[in-house]
Image (tube, rainbow, N blue to C red; front, side, top):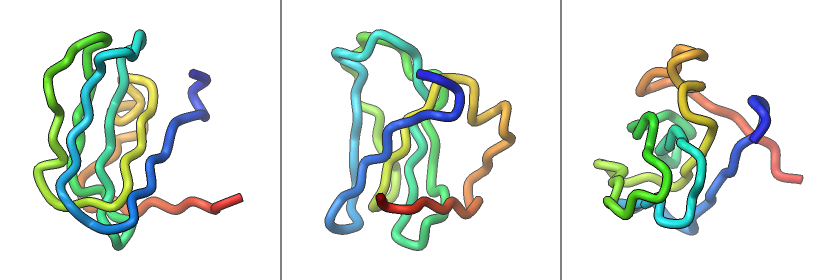
Length: 87
């Protein structure tokens, strides 16, 4: 993916979510976001093709996947507010 791209998952309600990298061929940072659009937890540098479950650790409504290393580059922290526009 390009640095300014990602994949945003929007769930109908806030609950625990778990992702894995089974069919993903690039390393990712997985950002778990709560219903108030605040970062709730991270999984940085998720390994490609790994089937290990990567839990949100707390209930979340959104998950953003970006290229590995970008969370650190942008100095993202738990509690940071995010914003997006639905097209």
